Image 1 (cartoon, rainbow, N blue to C red):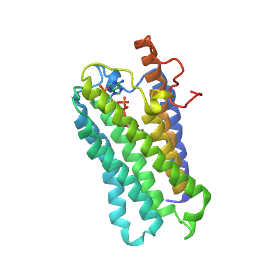
Image 2 (image 1 turned 30 degrees about the horizontal axis):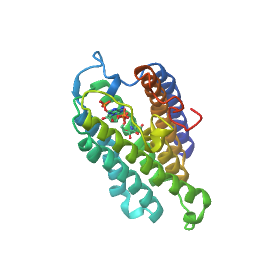
Image 3 (image 1 turned 135 degrees about the horizontal axis):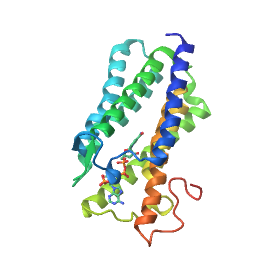
Image 4 (image 1 turned 180 degrees about the vertical axis):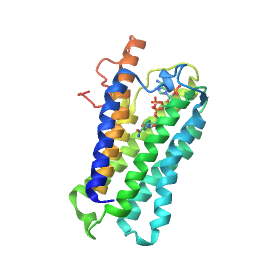
Amino acid sequence: MTDSVLNSIIIGWMLVAVISFFYLLRKPAPYGRYAAPGWGRQMDARVGWIIMESPALAVMLAYLLYYFRTLDDMTLWLMLLYIGHYTYRALIYPFRLRNTVKKTSAVVVGSAVFFNLVNANLLGYSFTYVADYPPDIGFETSFQTGAMLFFVGIWFNIKSDNRLIRLRKESPQAYVIPYGWLYRWVSCPNYLGEMIEWTGFALMAQHLASWSFVVWTVANLLPRALLHHQWYLRTFPDYPERRKAVIPYLL
Ligand code: NDP
Protein backbone atom coordinates (compact mmCIF):
# COMPACT_ATOMS: atom_id res chain seq x y z
CA MET A 1 0.00 0.00 0.00
CA THR A 2 1.40 3.44 -0.87
CA ASP A 3 1.66 6.14 1.81
CA SER A 4 -1.01 8.24 0.12
CA VAL A 5 -3.51 5.34 0.09
CA LEU A 6 -2.77 4.64 3.76
CA ASN A 7 -3.16 8.32 4.65
CA SER A 8 -6.49 8.52 2.80
CA ILE A 9 -7.77 5.48 4.72
CA ILE A 10 -6.66 7.00 8.03
CA ILE A 11 -8.22 10.39 7.25
CA GLY A 12 -11.49 8.64 6.31
CA TRP A 13 -11.33 6.74 9.60
CA MET A 14 -10.84 10.01 11.49
CA LEU A 15 -13.93 11.46 9.81
CA VAL A 16 -15.91 8.48 11.12
CA ALA A 17 -14.60 9.41 14.59
CA VAL A 18 -15.87 12.97 14.20
CA ILE A 19 -19.34 11.66 13.26
CA SER A 20 -19.23 9.27 16.25
CA PHE A 21 -18.31 12.17 18.52
CA PHE A 22 -21.51 14.05 17.66
CA TYR A 23 -23.59 10.89 17.88
CA LEU A 24 -22.16 10.00 21.32
CA LEU A 25 -22.89 13.52 22.58
CA ARG A 26 -26.58 12.76 22.11
CA LYS A 27 -26.65 9.02 22.80
CA PRO A 28 -24.13 7.57 25.25
CA ALA A 29 -22.72 4.08 24.60
CA PRO A 30 -25.15 1.84 26.55
CA TYR A 31 -22.91 0.38 29.23
CA GLY A 32 -22.26 1.23 32.88
CA ARG A 33 -24.76 3.83 34.12
CA TYR A 34 -26.33 4.07 30.65
CA ALA A 35 -26.90 0.30 30.24
CA ALA A 36 -30.36 -0.24 28.79
CA PRO A 37 -32.36 -3.04 27.20
CA GLY A 38 -32.80 -3.04 23.43
CA TRP A 39 -29.14 -3.15 22.43
CA GLY A 40 -28.86 -6.86 21.61
CA ARG A 41 -27.84 -9.73 23.82
CA GLN A 42 -26.57 -8.76 27.26
CA MET A 43 -23.42 -10.24 28.74
CA ASP A 44 -21.43 -9.99 31.94
CA ALA A 45 -19.54 -6.67 31.94
CA ARG A 46 -16.25 -8.34 32.91
CA VAL A 47 -16.45 -10.81 30.01
CA GLY A 48 -17.43 -7.90 27.76
CA TRP A 49 -14.25 -5.98 28.68
CA ILE A 50 -12.06 -8.99 27.87
CA ILE A 51 -13.73 -9.59 24.49
CA MET A 52 -13.69 -5.88 23.59
CA GLU A 53 -10.07 -5.15 24.39
CA SER A 54 -8.28 -8.43 23.53
CA PRO A 55 -8.30 -7.86 19.74
CA ALA A 56 -6.11 -4.75 20.15
CA LEU A 57 -3.63 -6.77 22.18
CA ALA A 58 -3.68 -9.77 19.81
CA VAL A 59 -3.27 -7.70 16.63
CA MET A 60 -0.30 -5.66 17.90
CA LEU A 61 1.33 -8.79 19.31
CA ALA A 62 0.92 -10.48 15.93
CA TYR A 63 2.59 -7.55 14.13
CA LEU A 64 5.39 -7.53 16.67
CA LEU A 65 6.10 -11.26 16.43
CA TYR A 66 5.79 -11.42 12.64
CA TYR A 67 8.06 -8.43 11.97
CA PHE A 68 10.28 -8.82 15.05
CA ARG A 69 13.56 -9.25 13.14
CA THR A 70 13.02 -6.10 11.06
CA LEU A 71 12.04 -3.72 13.90
CA ASP A 72 14.41 -1.06 15.19
CA ASP A 73 14.62 -0.54 18.96
CA MET A 74 12.35 2.52 19.07
CA THR A 75 9.57 0.86 17.05
CA LEU A 76 9.81 -2.18 19.28
CA TRP A 77 9.51 -0.09 22.46
CA LEU A 78 6.53 1.86 21.17
CA MET A 79 4.75 -1.34 20.20
CA LEU A 80 5.52 -2.74 23.65
CA LEU A 81 4.00 0.36 25.31
CA TYR A 82 0.77 -0.21 23.38
CA ILE A 83 0.84 -3.92 24.23
CA GLY A 84 1.45 -3.05 27.90
CA HIS A 85 -1.61 -0.79 27.97
CA TYR A 86 -3.85 -3.38 26.36
CA THR A 87 -2.52 -6.21 28.53
CA TYR A 88 -3.72 -4.15 31.48
CA ARG A 89 -7.03 -3.12 29.88
CA ALA A 90 -7.94 -6.57 28.49
CA LEU A 91 -6.55 -8.96 31.08
CA ILE A 92 -6.06 -7.12 34.39
CA TYR A 93 -8.62 -4.29 34.59
CA PRO A 94 -11.66 -6.58 34.10
CA PHE A 95 -10.61 -8.69 37.09
CA ARG A 96 -10.18 -5.60 39.25
CA LEU A 97 -13.83 -4.63 38.73
CA ARG A 98 -15.21 -5.96 41.99
CA ASN A 99 -18.87 -6.56 42.67
CA THR A 100 -19.76 -5.88 39.09
CA VAL A 101 -23.43 -6.66 38.61
CA LYS A 102 -23.61 -4.73 35.37
CA LYS A 103 -24.33 -6.22 32.00
CA THR A 104 -23.03 -4.90 28.74
CA SER A 105 -24.67 -5.27 25.37
CA ALA A 106 -23.52 -7.16 22.29
CA VAL A 107 -23.76 -3.91 20.29
CA VAL A 108 -21.24 -2.18 22.58
CA VAL A 109 -18.93 -5.20 22.53
CA GLY A 110 -19.20 -5.62 18.74
CA SER A 111 -18.52 -1.97 17.96
CA ALA A 112 -15.57 -1.87 20.39
CA VAL A 113 -14.09 -5.00 18.78
CA PHE A 114 -14.39 -3.35 15.35
CA PHE A 115 -12.86 -0.09 16.66
CA ASN A 116 -9.94 -1.96 18.24
CA LEU A 117 -9.31 -4.15 15.18
CA VAL A 118 -9.15 -1.16 12.82
CA ASN A 119 -7.02 0.98 15.13
CA ALA A 120 -4.58 -1.78 16.02
CA ASN A 121 -4.14 -2.70 12.35
CA LEU A 122 -3.56 0.92 11.30
CA LEU A 123 -1.04 1.33 14.12
CA GLY A 124 0.64 -2.05 13.51
CA TYR A 125 0.91 -1.38 9.78
CA SER A 126 2.28 2.13 10.38
CA PHE A 127 4.88 0.86 12.85
CA THR A 128 6.07 -1.89 10.51
CA TYR A 129 5.83 -0.18 7.09
CA VAL A 130 5.86 3.59 7.63
CA ALA A 131 7.75 4.54 10.80
CA ASP A 132 11.42 5.32 10.31
CA TYR A 133 12.86 6.73 13.51
CA PRO A 134 16.23 8.51 13.53
CA PRO A 135 18.65 7.06 16.11
CA ASP A 136 18.60 10.27 18.17
CA ILE A 137 14.79 10.58 18.35
CA GLY A 138 14.96 10.06 22.12
CA PHE A 139 16.68 13.45 22.43
CA GLU A 140 13.94 15.36 20.61
CA THR A 141 11.87 17.64 22.86
CA SER A 142 8.58 16.49 21.30
CA PHE A 143 9.47 12.85 21.92
CA GLN A 144 10.48 13.53 25.53
CA THR A 145 7.30 15.55 26.12
CA GLY A 146 5.32 12.66 24.64
CA ALA A 147 7.02 10.13 26.93
CA MET A 148 6.26 12.30 29.96
CA LEU A 149 2.61 12.77 28.94
CA PHE A 150 2.22 9.04 28.25
CA PHE A 151 3.29 8.03 31.76
CA VAL A 152 1.48 10.92 33.49
CA GLY A 153 -1.66 9.91 31.58
CA ILE A 154 -1.35 6.30 32.75
CA TRP A 155 -0.87 7.49 36.31
CA PHE A 156 -3.96 9.76 36.18
CA ASN A 157 -6.02 7.04 34.49
CA ILE A 158 -5.18 4.13 36.78
CA LYS A 159 -5.23 6.10 40.01
CA SER A 160 -8.62 7.62 39.11
CA ASP A 161 -10.04 4.26 38.05
CA ASN A 162 -8.76 2.80 41.35
CA ARG A 163 -10.94 5.29 43.26
CA LEU A 164 -14.02 4.31 41.28
CA ILE A 165 -13.31 0.60 41.68
CA ARG A 166 -13.07 1.17 45.45
CA LEU A 167 -16.33 3.14 45.50
CA ARG A 168 -18.08 0.41 43.54
CA LYS A 169 -16.75 -2.18 46.01
CA GLU A 170 -18.01 -0.18 49.00
CA SER A 171 -21.32 0.63 47.34
CA PRO A 172 -22.14 -2.23 44.93
CA GLN A 173 -25.56 -1.00 43.83
CA ALA A 174 -25.51 2.79 44.09
CA TYR A 175 -23.39 5.51 42.55
CA VAL A 176 -21.75 7.92 44.97
CA ILE A 177 -19.86 11.19 44.53
CA PRO A 178 -16.11 10.58 44.15
CA TYR A 179 -13.94 12.97 46.20
CA GLY A 180 -10.25 13.72 46.47
CA TRP A 181 -7.27 13.39 44.08
CA LEU A 182 -8.17 14.86 40.64
CA TYR A 183 -11.89 14.51 41.41
CA ARG A 184 -11.50 17.83 43.22
CA TRP A 185 -11.33 19.46 39.77
CA VAL A 186 -13.07 17.15 37.33
CA SER A 187 -15.75 14.46 37.24
CA CYS A 188 -13.82 12.11 34.92
CA PRO A 189 -10.07 12.23 35.57
CA ASN A 190 -9.81 8.62 34.33
CA TYR A 191 -10.89 9.79 30.86
CA LEU A 192 -8.61 12.84 31.09
CA GLY A 193 -5.70 10.48 31.86
CA GLU A 194 -6.52 8.21 28.93
CA MET A 195 -6.64 11.19 26.51
CA ILE A 196 -3.32 12.54 27.83
CA GLU A 197 -1.75 9.08 27.59
CA TRP A 198 -2.55 8.61 23.89
CA THR A 199 -1.60 12.20 23.03
CA GLY A 200 1.80 11.44 24.56
CA PHE A 201 1.97 8.21 22.57
CA ALA A 202 1.26 10.07 19.30
CA LEU A 203 3.97 12.63 20.07
CA MET A 204 6.41 9.73 20.41
CA ALA A 205 5.14 7.61 17.50
CA GLN A 206 4.85 10.57 15.10
CA HIS A 207 2.69 8.92 12.46
CA LEU A 208 -0.84 9.68 11.29
CA ALA A 209 -2.28 6.42 12.65
CA SER A 210 -1.25 7.38 16.19
CA TRP A 211 -3.00 10.77 15.81
CA SER A 212 -6.05 9.02 14.44
CA PHE A 213 -6.06 6.98 17.64
CA VAL A 214 -6.04 10.20 19.68
CA VAL A 215 -8.98 11.52 17.66
CA TRP A 216 -10.88 8.28 18.33
CA THR A 217 -10.05 8.30 22.04
CA VAL A 218 -11.34 11.87 22.35
CA ALA A 219 -14.43 11.00 20.25
CA ASN A 220 -15.23 8.16 22.65
CA LEU A 221 -14.35 9.74 25.97
CA LEU A 222 -15.04 13.47 25.73
CA PRO A 223 -18.81 13.07 25.07
CA ARG A 224 -18.97 10.43 27.79
CA ALA A 225 -17.23 12.74 30.27
CA LEU A 226 -19.67 15.58 29.46
CA LEU A 227 -22.65 13.25 29.89
CA HIS A 228 -21.26 11.77 33.14
CA HIS A 229 -20.84 15.31 34.47
CA GLN A 230 -24.41 16.30 33.57
CA TRP A 231 -25.61 13.02 35.10
CA TYR A 232 -23.76 13.78 38.38
CA LEU A 233 -25.23 17.31 38.47
CA ARG A 234 -28.76 15.94 37.88
CA THR A 235 -28.41 13.07 40.34
CA PHE A 236 -26.71 14.78 43.29
CA PRO A 237 -28.09 18.20 44.35
CA ASP A 238 -24.99 18.64 46.54
CA TYR A 239 -22.55 17.91 43.71
CA PRO A 240 -19.48 20.21 43.96
CA GLU A 241 -20.34 23.25 41.86
CA ARG A 242 -16.86 24.21 40.77
CA ARG A 243 -15.99 20.76 39.46
CA LYS A 244 -15.75 20.56 35.65
CA ALA A 245 -16.36 17.51 33.43
CA VAL A 246 -12.87 16.65 32.23
CA ILE A 247 -10.55 19.66 31.89
CA PRO A 248 -9.92 21.58 35.13
CA TYR A 249 -11.43 25.12 35.13
CA LEU A 250 -12.42 24.82 31.45
CA LEU A 251 -14.75 22.03 30.37
P1 NDP B 1 -16.59 4.66 34.30
O1 NDP B 1 -15.95 5.80 35.02
O2 NDP B 1 -17.95 4.90 33.75
O3 NDP B 1 -16.69 3.36 35.25
C1 NDP B 1 -15.56 2.71 35.75
C2 NDP B 1 -15.96 1.79 36.92
O4 NDP B 1 -16.24 2.58 38.08
C3 NDP B 1 -17.23 0.96 36.69
O5 NDP B 1 -17.11 -0.24 37.41
C4 NDP B 1 -18.33 1.83 37.30
O6 NDP B 1 -19.45 1.09 37.75
C5 NDP B 1 -17.60 2.41 38.50
N1 NDP B 1 -18.08 3.77 38.84
C6 NDP B 1 -18.03 4.86 38.02
N2 NDP B 1 -18.51 5.94 38.66
C7 NDP B 1 -18.89 5.51 39.90
C8 NDP B 1 -19.47 6.18 41.02
N3 NDP B 1 -19.74 7.48 40.99
N4 NDP B 1 -19.76 5.44 42.12
C9 NDP B 1 -19.47 4.12 42.16
N5 NDP B 1 -18.90 3.43 41.12
C10 NDP B 1 -18.63 4.12 40.01
O7 NDP B 1 -15.55 4.24 33.15
P2 NDP B 1 -15.72 3.33 31.84
O8 NDP B 1 -16.29 2.02 32.25
O9 NDP B 1 -16.36 4.13 30.75
O10 NDP B 1 -14.16 3.17 31.42
C11 NDP B 1 -13.28 2.37 32.18
C12 NDP B 1 -11.86 2.60 31.68
O11 NDP B 1 -11.75 2.28 30.29
C13 NDP B 1 -11.39 4.05 31.82
O12 NDP B 1 -10.06 4.04 32.26
C14 NDP B 1 -11.46 4.60 30.42
O13 NDP B 1 -10.50 5.60 30.21
C15 NDP B 1 -11.21 3.37 29.56
N6 NDP B 1 -11.89 3.46 28.26
C16 NDP B 1 -11.15 3.82 27.14
C17 NDP B 1 -11.76 4.01 25.93
C18 NDP B 1 -10.97 4.44 24.73
O14 NDP B 1 -11.56 4.77 23.71
N7 NDP B 1 -9.63 4.44 24.77
C19 NDP B 1 -13.21 3.81 25.77
C20 NDP B 1 -13.90 3.46 27.00
C21 NDP B 1 -13.24 3.31 28.19
P3 NDP B 1 -20.69 0.79 36.75
O15 NDP B 1 -20.19 -0.22 35.75
O16 NDP B 1 -21.73 0.27 37.68
O17 NDP B 1 -21.08 2.09 36.09
